[in-house]
Length: 324
Image (cartoon, rainbow, N blue to C red; front, top):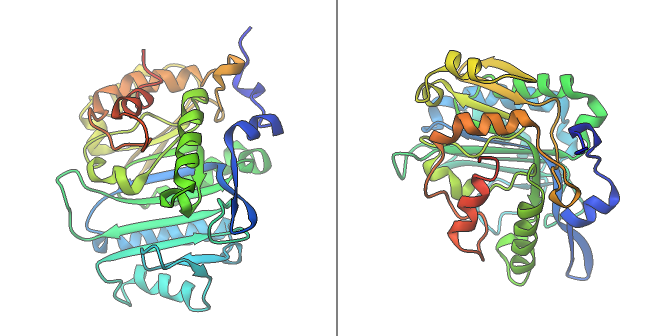
């Protein structure tokens, strides 16, 4: 009998196949980590929706205290990573409230951990601009939690927390489940080669682990969807292109949860997220595959590269791994 989703424990042996450690200036650091992640693609212009993000930010901080974070980058540049400055929280609050100008884009990166370059357990990464670079362009928000957050707080409390964060946001789509978190060294040689190789290996083996590069993908996410995660939020506009909420709900049978938000609907596919390790004959929930089938017409034919060292066909195949 195939393992059920409940049987898919994240044990030490499994983590060794997913996470990656490297020597960084004489210190052993985790440069690829397993998290529960939330990736959101949202509307442009940011300025028109900053107050909505402010409400999401407040909901997030009720469960993840500001003192969790040790490092910041509010510049959006590679040289902007540093320890948390005393004024960082007020700066972010002023940007979201419209009390201070954020310049060409509102860029917020906050992380815990032992250094700015390790793959921490908590990440809040926001990028909001006011002008489109393409018709399908979007802004994005990425939040990472520890991989065991659902085991510690429970499924219902976590989904309620997630709903509070996402409800105000003018999203195009959002995805929550097991996600690979990466060090800021992903673009730095020689770390990039080994990290890219690990992302590709995990993507091939663990069907339930999301791999995302929102700063590359956002250019088309106003018009397309990624493959669904354990929880997938879809805007009213996008779901309308495949027949609307009523049609989608009637097509989905099984353990689904539905969460109405101001700008669309959230869909939970299965009781809890699954790693789906092919080497152990594990599977994602049948509900996640059913949702993938319904959403397939909204997939992009030319998604952004997820695996920098591999042909583009590998990214396309990964995006469609739950279909067929």
